[in-house]
Image (tube, rainbow, N blue to C red; front, top):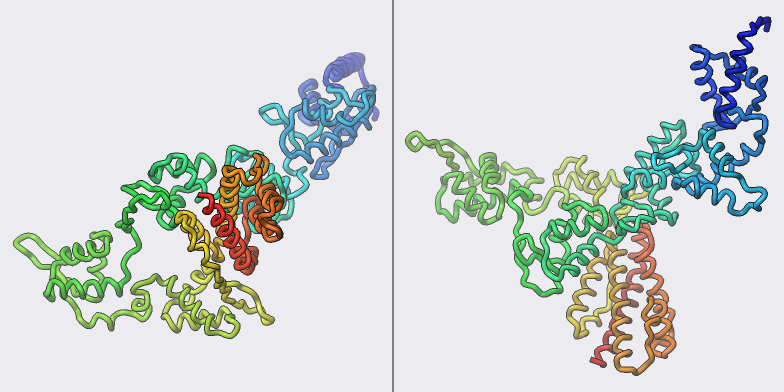
Length: 597
């Protein structure tokens, strides 16, 4: 290279070599570059000259490769076995890729050496050195180690990392957004949908769904419940033994799993297992407490234009006048409908049923309204049809009527849209949104690529022999479960019937135990499988195939993943057989139990 070195240059290089030797046995090339720039006060380091110098100093190069396929150098002292370093790195990375979750250095050492003979185990220093120079491994603030996100091999592993880092349950839509964002960040291709994420999570035992919320958690998070919100609401009331406020029920459920207070409020007002027993106080319906009528809130949905016209006509007739103060009209209608008086006042000002004008009483101005008998001619077809129901409900009702009268209860979406718009007078664009909210509608495509809608009907006949039971509370529980046997909640209905079936069998066995007619041990009560074995063993049931079907169904509903629409359709198709099996055996065991009481 035609370089002339002075004696002082050799001295400086010798001192530099001594400094390098004092560093770790294996050093990342980037760290050496930083050391060189500091030591010699350089701005740029010629990497090839540096590598030549390191080899002259007796360091051996080790070429490593990141998950991104980028290669980089580390340099080892002469006594270091380069091939062994690479082997250690590969084993550590492989172990951390498999576990995904961060591991302590002690756990890494233990797992890496677990199946090795004593003389072939890696030392603690060797493992620590390998971790330090491997760019695919990162250390966390709590001194644990994990592989970089880009090293994770499957979508499931990446989803595990996302949830682990967030430390909270997440909705599949949020997971899809983060997963696709990270793919872009790390130069990968990804367009995974929430539906695909749900499928992947449901087939991996490391994850658990939280009820039917669409949120998922890590199975190791025991502090977060996967129970359905309704079951936890019941649990809150049972644990109290007395009525609770909306806020109390919400706080109890939230302590177990993520939930919105609006969801709790909706369930309390809509689900018949709960009843309002006081001002902001709720109890279980089967407690038999006197229910307080739940009035609409003052801010509830507004009265339709046509309905308001009809109420105005009735009010004028009641007042026996043609002209009245707007404030008097709004006050009367608000009392009849329990709507906001102020909101009705402003609606009257725009109603086609009245002509509004100002009248002065001294210096005070009051608004008055004169009734217009011919107001109906000013109402549109859609306004008349939606007098009692919303536009969405009208569209959905019309769609149902069209499909019921169509061949095979199926028709092209475009044809349905045009017919609905013609029948109701609604904008064509409104039809799509209403149809998307109809769970009884199934979409497909025909040979021409047109979207076809099919009405999925699920009218099932269930046995009513349960109504002959003497336990009225049990009858109410059964009917509540049967009410859920519909497309959007069939899994919940079957789950409730499974719980009732198991509880009824257990109560029957306890009566047997009291009567000492048969021997019943604590192990016989341990789980449903052992209870069914006991029934067969004692000749109470001779053919247990039906009971095994119910047991398997009950386990699937209790421990299986949340079913999608296709799965719920399959459940609906089989529901008549399953429900009648449940009812037969619930009645059988309950009536036999009644004989002992």
